[in-house]
Image 1 (cartoon, each protein chain N blue to C red):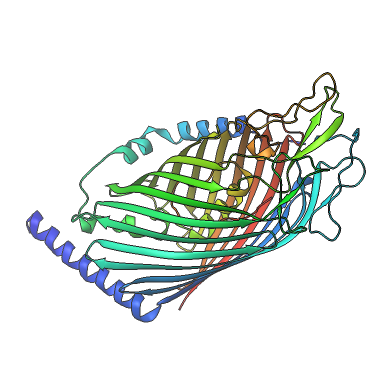
Image 2 (image 1 turned 120 degrees about the vertical axis):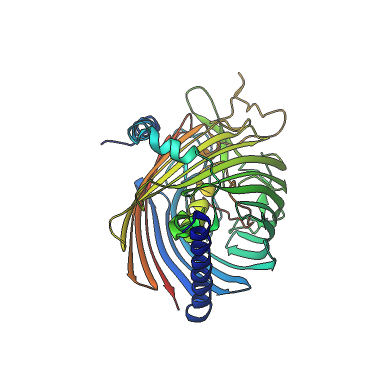
Length: 83
Length: 410
């Protein structure tokens, strides 16, 4: 049975990044003065730093219980005796 | 019309539109409820979790008040840390009637368990003055062998031009840990057959965070945070054991998990959210570097791409890559000397918990979202988690995660 491996996915990730072209990377890294009336695109739900808080909370809990690392984006407290 | 006049007109229009939106939000849909059901199922009948969640938000001009509830039911079998071998000179039994029992036969490398967890949280976010937002909250969690109580405060300051936001946060957590069968914790590194029960374990944790987010351009926002966590108290896992075995993996004794009484964690996190040019598709990229004084260092990369199929429908592929080094005191087994006596670590710390082993992990997922009405969203996602461990006896773990969520504003 085929199993996903880190190396496979890393390769896919690198390929996707390369295929997406340099223009997107350039667009991301371009720093410009943004006036209030130019922020329409930034107001959307999908442009929020946390676009789905419910999903983020669940993911944090899963990885907290399955890996040795935790934290990063926010502090909220709370723990569990997860297996 | 001059450029300046044109911009002023646009600015006036946007301000009116923004104020109108805010008012409509405050009057027409101040409540938002987001509910979700999730199933997490590991391969080979290992851990299975059913999770039900509900978040209720009350949005007003002054801020947001949110209440969250979580209910988990967990069951299955989790690796105990014991060597996966039926050739054992000792037996391992757990108290009858407990929620956790050893595997059948001579192989007790898996411990069966069954538990329920409930969690409740309250959060308040309030704009104290122009550009200054304060937040505070609390969370309480209870299961048959673990209690957790947490509180957090945060502050966010927006620059005058609203381009940059600085934020800081602090969280305090106090946990109580015990075995569900005995109500106590076993003596760390005590022989399982002779181990003395201690009182219940307790652990206090303080987490702190400093962050900044900035609008880079019309379609990009970036975030960077540095955080730390210091915990003091009982860190061992009362159910995990480590075997002392010879080179043929014949188990001669088992010892309870034993970890240091403190842990200091540091994290650097960065994220970029970008809307692809000439589209309404967005990409979320993040990276986290984690390090602690147990010797664990990890790298996490995460990418989500939301592709809008139409104004109402979207697809969101997700890829997460993770790798970590092992904790200094992680060992698959304890060695024995020529007289077959276990060689215990000098510092007294030893754990065979597979989660402290060198690990690579990857998650591949897909989410579908649909806006059923102006105030109603539905999301489905399925993810596949695959973990590989360096030396642990159970050297792989995989799970399928399915989640369906429903959001309603009223």
